[in-house]
Image (cartoon, one colour):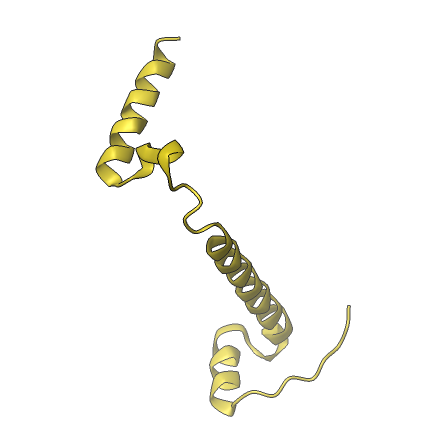
Length: 81
């Protein structure tokens, strides 16, 4: 476990303390940082894969209606096996 020094506004620190108390700050800030990192990773993944299902090979994902029909047809064929 490493230690670090963090500067933040008095108002933000007070709001955190009201929720978790002074002894809960470290855990709260660690969890908040972890959640933020996960959101950033997800955003990067979404940007990297945006538009990947386009073209003739993926016509069933053209729009919501077409995708819903494809899902119904796919589920129907799976239940028959």
